Image (cartoon, rainbow, N blue to C red; front, side, top):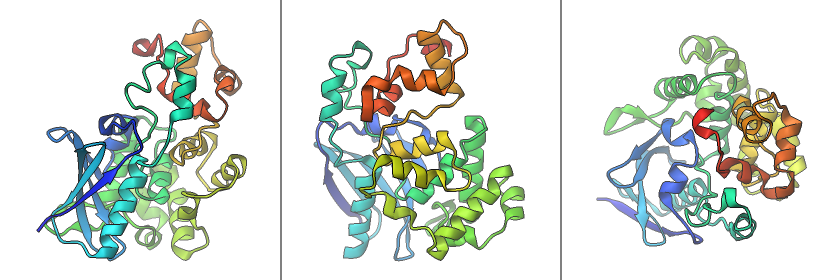
Length: 297
């Protein structure tokens, strides 16, 4: 018996736009389902069950199919998770009003861009973000795949597939195992420390999802996590719906250099200055900018 949930989204909404918003769809336990125009995600529910969530467009929102009956608590958790992952409740009308005045962002409203694909937990997003640092994208994909395969709970009807590991499961391992088995390199102690602090209750990471803390304070709290530097903190802020910072990395430097500085080297100050007028939307303005030299970068 299949459980089906239908969830509405604040308009305008485009599931493909969310899926393509950044690279998370390429990281396990996500998997794109191109035939249905949606995606699959293997979820480890609070009840202990591991299930596959199949998500596709339905009317102005999405339909979520789970190939097993869910009780009321599980249904509520799935609905809450998908709402968060897709930002179904997010309202970008203020951003769109500004974007209409900028030719480089004139496309965003028509394409319903703005939402960024998120994991169901900030713990998963933080681990994945740490694994993007100082490596090529292929390295990130490899590390995440190894982490999921080695430490994630298996799907009962297909044990070759796994959910993302829980904080408790990662906290129970050690630095050497994360280095040798998952091949996380220097990131291993950061991931281990994060898992241990979350599993022990010393850090309530998930409380930051809906916090009303000022962005500056939230930024400080993210920077206090070992392994989270300025780029990672800005990236996590964007996933939390705060766009006051631009995630400055080598890619951002290349784009801004070619767009405004004739290919000359630029730093964080030049990148921030390029989007300063966008205020609380500067991260989104950077993310969805129509770059002249994107194909050359």
